[in-house]
Image (cartoon, rainbow, N blue to C red):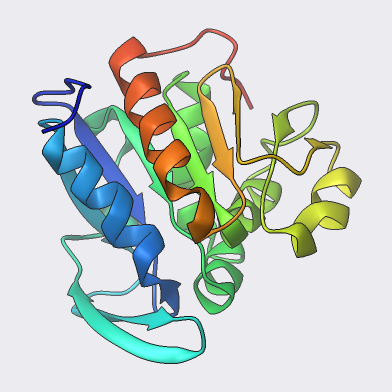
Amino acid sequence: MSEHNISGKKVAFLLTDGVEQIELTSPWDAVKGAGGIPTLVSPKTGTLQGFDGMDKGDTFDVDLAVADAKADDYDALVLPGGVVNADFLRVDKDAQAFARAFFEQHKPVASICHGAWLLIDAGVVNGRDLTSYHTLATDLKNAGANWSDEEVVVDQGLVTSRSPEDLEAFNDKLLEEIEEGPHEGQTP
């Protein structure tokens, strides 16, 4: 049982094929363990292929197409990583708009590893403090972010971490930010 209580809070997980599955399953389980209601949102329908590094992992059922999803219906957004997943999402206009809407509504957003690529294309990282997988550092800095190599960085409702090794801290801060609710500083 979690020390956090987000009972009844709805959390969207935005991803597609190629997701680093531990970056989906670990926060998903943390949200459920704290009483939250996770929903898998994706540009595609049916099932998604997860990966464990470069190896195929499990498949996951999509709950809702991102084109039909509305940030209004959720209390927070989680962006798992995985190179292929993140590269597909970053160019999807519906995914960009969905992610940007959470910032416009000042709601918590949590991104781990390569998930921050979508935040660049959604236009929400300029002036923000964050971290990511180290290979995204230049991209994020070029987009105006203040990137640092830390386990977890929290900036006005935006939670970011580097890799699966940071999941414990990432999950804890994700739940804490959902408990706190909207942050006026969480803007695009």
